Length: 389
Image (tube, rainbow, N blue to C red; front, side, top):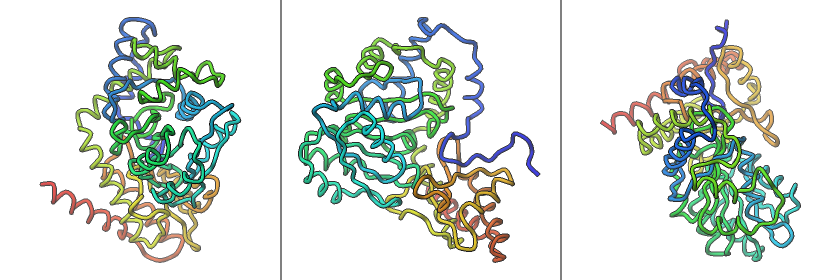
């Protein structure tokens, strides 16, 4: 029996909200052009910079992460004269390609098998075949597969092989993994509110390099709301060009305070620990992981089902008991389930999920697996805890 309104939410976004963030959302409304709101916009924009690894302004859009992906695309390429490479390692790389196609931009897709990362060698070979590109679009964490692409190395390849802008979808990992946008030579970095930043959906954030800022001033792609040159001009004055989602700005302020109290290096370590606990627990159950360890994401883990216990059957069993995990998307629909472990989540939150999967497999296969995954995860947790003290 499920207690109403009580869920163990372990999907890769939206993620659970900390109580302080929930409280911030119900603060009294203020004028969106008031000095108080301007100061709030200036403050949160500045405090977002460390999570991007940049000294540039972080622009704020009231919209989903996809709105920022679209803004990045149409503010950096002229469809009449320029072409782009899009690296597709899953559903969200494919979304970048769809956005470019919608605006009739000449697009070269580098499609890789879902569940594998793009390596520097693969990208180098592909770029040599397309020497006239103006931008390369990459996905940092591919949410649909649990891949973490090696952005630092891939950005280096782009710089070695071309003068193209490096444009990154970091929606499902910024705030949980290392990001050194300036040092890595990334030109546009995009993220959204409802993932590692522990907010409801509705805000998107973009930082632009000096090179991208110059390009934004000379792009003719028609856009009004998503014209990044307008956002960049206004953020320098502590404004957004259009009405911001004020309550979400209150929530962002509260979430950033929580992150600052924990410290970014500790946040990165926490997410890495949760990844290792999840993966070792799943392996102990003889369930196939979609990705290998080298390129696995600290924020989401993708798992294949078995012949005698499909991914959807496992998901349904957990959902009936109040544990929500995600299914596969597009090419992987019905083939995998995905466990989100980012944002307002700690190692102890993972044990009910792993225990639930044990119960599902024990019920579906009649093979007694109680405690197997939990023990493997506990061993990881205990080992890491002992080495830190």
